[in-house]
Length: 193
Image (cartoon, rainbow, N blue to C red; front, top):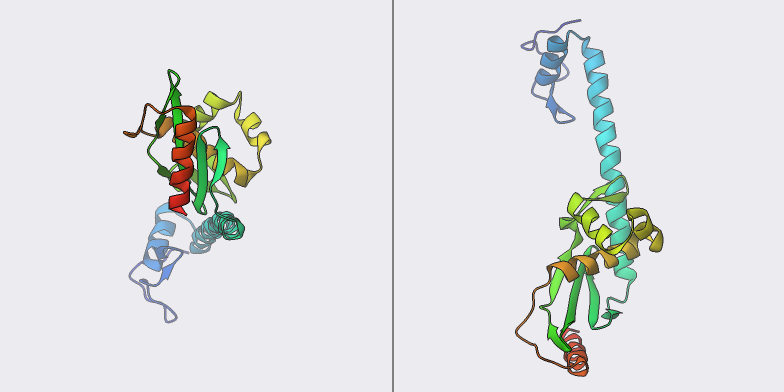
C-alpha cells in the first residue's frame, strides 16, 4: 500500500513524530523504498528499540559508576611512589605526582582526568579509542592482560593514572630531594581535603 504524503489520517497527522521521524518522513521513506508502510514502520520501530536498549545499557554503566563513586571514601590514595589519586566523580580522577630526574624531583601540576573524554560507553561497558589502546600497550603486553589485571571499575582509576603520567605538565616546583617531594605532595593533599 502506497500512501500520498499529503494525506491526513483522522487519528494523527503527518507531522506527528515517532522515533525521531515524522509520519510524513515514514510515508516518504516507504514510498521511496517501494515498501509497504507496515514494513517501513516495523524497521523504524526495531531501530528505535535497539537504540533504546543501547541507551539503557550505557545508563546502567553510568549508574553503576555513580553508585560506586557515592559508596567510595573519595580519599587521596597513594597509587605509586610519589603519586596520589582521588576520585572526584564517577569517571573523574584528580592526580598529582613528582617525577625523578637526575636524582632530583620535580612536582607535576595536579590535573583532573575525565575519562568520558577518553572512553566510549557502549553496551553496559566501555570501549577504548585508538590512542588509549596505544597507551595501554605502553604499559601492558596486551589489552587482555590489562583487563584481566583489574575489575572494570578499578581499571578506570589505573587508566586515569596512565593518562596523567603521559599528559601531566611539570610545575615550577623542582630540584627537590625525594623526601622533600614526598612532604610537598602530602601537604598538597592535606590542603585539598
